[in-house]
Image (tube, rainbow, N blue to C red; front, side, top):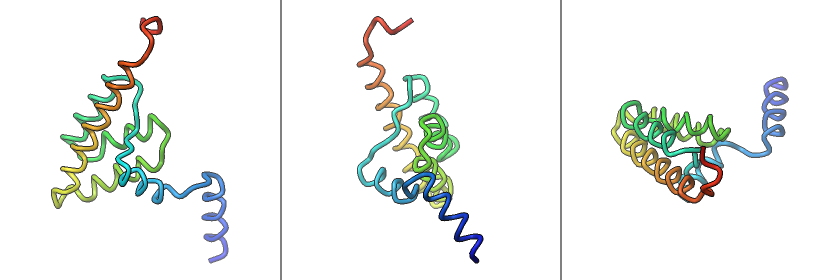
Length: 112
């Protein structure tokens, strides 16, 4: 009992916040991660269509956001009752749109 408490306490103090609480906040505010390029955004969208939650997990890994990874896991788990798949496709679309908007505002001099 004490060892588990100590381990959990140290993990919480390392991150400073709870990924589940952050995931809830992201979902309610529709705050999707903004991946670096349109091609990565499209990849996340396609992955979310064919393997629910996988594109969201990839976006979470790329942006180093545990809360986004929690969302991806929930999308995968809930996909068997269809709501997770719908959520996953919608979230993938939003990730793509966010990446497209981010890329369109980059200065022209930075493109190779």
